[in-house]
Structure formats: C-alpha cells, structure tokens
Amino acid sequence: MDELREKLFYQQKNGYDRIDMEERLALEAYSADYMAFLNASRTEREAVKNAVAAARERGFTEYRRGMELTPGTKLYHINRGKAITLVTIGRQPLSQGAVIAGAHVDSPRLDMKQFPLYEDTEMGYLRTHYYGGIKKFHWITIPLELHGVVALKNGDVVDVSIGREPGEPKFVITDLLPHLGGEMMKKPMNEAYTGEGLTVLIGSAPYAGAGKDRVRLALLSILNDLYGITEEDFLSAELAVVPSYEACEIGLDRSMIGGYGQDDKVCAYAALRALLDAEAPERTCVCMLADKEETGSEGVTGMLSDAFESFMEELCQAQGVALRRCFENSFCLSADVPSAFDPLYADAFEKRSTAKINYGVGILKYTGSRGKHNTNDASAESLAALRRILDENQVVWQMAELGKVDHGGGGTIAKFMAQRNIDTVDLGTPLLSMHAPFEICSKLDCYSTYKAIRSVFTAR
Ligand code: MN
Ligand code: MN
Image 1 (cartoon, rainbow, N blue to C red):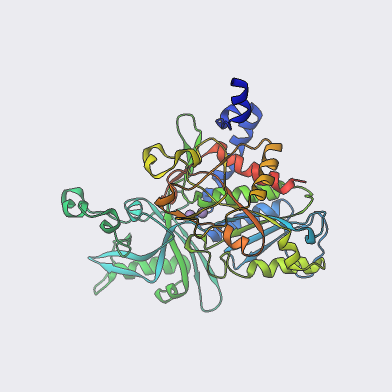
Image 2: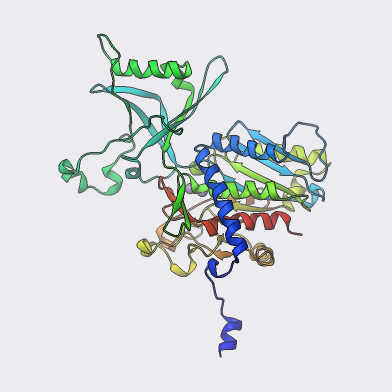
C-alpha cells in the first residue's frame, strides 16, 4: 500500500525540503536585488526607469523603427513613460511565436485630485482619489511619500519625489483618537473611513505676514522653490502618495520580504530579470510591464491598449511576418500575485487549492470570481506544457487559487492576452496582506517566480 500511495498520491513538499545550499544562496542574492528594485520603484514611471537602467547595463538599446533584428538583438520600447516592453530576438522567426511574460508595475496608492491643495484650521492638506482596490483604514497614520510628475504648458515634465531619500520629510493622514471614537467604531469598516476622508496633511507653518491662506501660500512657495511650479500646474500633474515603508526582511529567520507595491513588482522584477538573463533564446522573448492593471487595464498604457499590438506588429513586419501568425503561436505567462493561504483568515480560503508560503511560485488555471467570470481559464494543454518545463528545470511550484468560490475574486492581464489569441497561463508569487501598504512574500517563492519565467523563456 505504501508503494501504491507513493505512486498515486500527489504529494506537495515545502520548498525548503526541495532545494540545496546553492539554491539557498541564489535566492538570498536574488531577494536582495529585488528589494533594491522595489525600494526604488514606488510608481510605474519609476519602475520603467529602473527597468531601462537595468536593461541598458545588459546591452539593451531603445527600439528604433527600421533597426535590424537578428537573433540575440536586445531592445526595449517605452510606452509614454509608464509601461515598457523588452525583447530579446530569438533564433526562430516571429512566425513561430514569441514567449511573453506580462506583469504590471502600477500598485494601489492615493492619487492627488487636480485641485488638491487646501487649507483648513491653518493646516495644509492634499485631496486624494484612491487608485486600485484598498482597505481605506490601512492608509491612516502611516508615513507617506509624494511621487509623480507635473507636466508644464511649455512641454517640460518635472519629476517629483519627496520622502524617499533619507532626511526628507514625509506626509500622513490623521485619525480620530479612540477616546472620541465611540460612534466611529460602531460603523462597518467600509463606512468608518471614506474616500474623501483620505486627505493628506502636508504642512502647518503660515507664511510670515497678514491675510488669508497663509499656510497654503507657504506650501506653494516651497513647491515653487523646489520645482518651479504654481498651483495651476496641479491641473496637469500626476502625483500620488505611497507608503513610506522600506522593503525589509521579515521573520527571525529572515525568510520573508515585506514592502510596498509587491503586487505586482515582485513578478515584474522576476519577468525583467528572467529576460535579462535569457541569453540567445530559441524563440523571441518578451517582457511586458504594463500600467493600469489595478484599475482594470484600461487607458493607453494599460494592457487593453493597442500599444502592444502596434509595437509587436513592427517587430513582425521587420521579419516579414503577420502579427496574427505570431500571436497564434505565442505563449504568455501572465505574471501576477495570487494570495497566499493565511491561517489568521482561514475562513476566506479553501485550503487545499490556495498557494502556501514557501511552496513555490503559484500557477493558476483561472482567476476571476463567482463562476469563473472575467477569467482566462487556461487550457489543460497549456498547463501540461508548463508542468513539464517547470519540472525539467527543478522549479519549486504549486497550483493556486485566489480564495473560496463564493467569496469574491480578482483578475489579471491574462484575459487580455488571451483576447489577442495568445495561449496564456497565470503565475505569480503568493502574497500575504495583498493590497495592504506593506505586503509579504517568501524569498523562496519570489526566487521561484524568477526561475519559472526564465525556464519558460529558455525552454526548447
Ligand atoms: Mn496584480
Ligand atoms: Mn492587485
């Protein structure tokens, strides 16, 4: 019977029981690099800049129309500063399809409104409109940084970043003291804190002299000194506050990583590094880092935009290949984070089907919610091909599902890639506290995600 059990049962093992010392050292080194990327990439624009810097170091050049595409050519193409596609041309023509890893580099945050600045009771505030799915109370009384751009009428774009560098001031949203919170604490959590209430305190010292709005004037004067902007320039700005938490190791054993924006920069970094490390691939490899996933992938820098076709079509044309031929033979990994099973909230999960910390990269046949709505439901054949590649390359992996069938769900860019007639499978690093200002993953799962994507890039 033991033999039969061994043969017939599917046994999962903790990743730490499956890797050797060499792998442990590799995952530590990889995790350190990832944390540095995460700290420096607070917004999609910053992530794109850092991806470009990393790619240029490895010999990638910016795509120019008409450039020669030969096996091994490494190029990147930026979409409006907020999304990027990086490509290594394979030995086979694009008619054989590309291997694509798509992730997103936007994360939940609080965007400034276009009339953000006001003064109340001689304190200065910024009004916000939150971006992505958040639990609002998370954003109260935590240190915040201001990031983004202000586009001026003369065409100049001013980069704004306050609170990231050591010694820089930070910002905060205040809370009501519990002593007076009796009524508030009786409210359901989604009513106790409101969207309009997510208003950021940014200063309190009045401008010297007499008259109204002296705090607002003082704050505008500081912004004018720093960036040369006036209040009117907020009209064409994209500014956001993000949590000011430094990515760090979590646990006595340092086995986990905590940080802001791991959804989905943990997979974005894995896809990027996998592409940079995939030397001379058989098929053309593509790393697509998209914007706007957290708000539904709409907008010109989201995965629903035609920007991806437009760029891929140019590559295809350079090889005399029809884009549709390329897409129908392509394979895409939609690299985005699934939830990890959390025993503190066990009721929300079906334990057997949910990813577990340290059991490796999570593979999802489907995402979506309530009856598989809004999902790419990957084919059995695609999953079988992926299983083979991951096992051949000793990748630690596990099947994953978001949570209990009737509890809700979420989507990824997978369905938008499938819409393009590209076979697509979801995969990603399981997270605890997803969409909180400080998210947790395991180093082993983080490294396994990179290894999985690299294996698919380099598979024969
Ligand atoms: Mn995501
Ligand atoms: Mn998300």
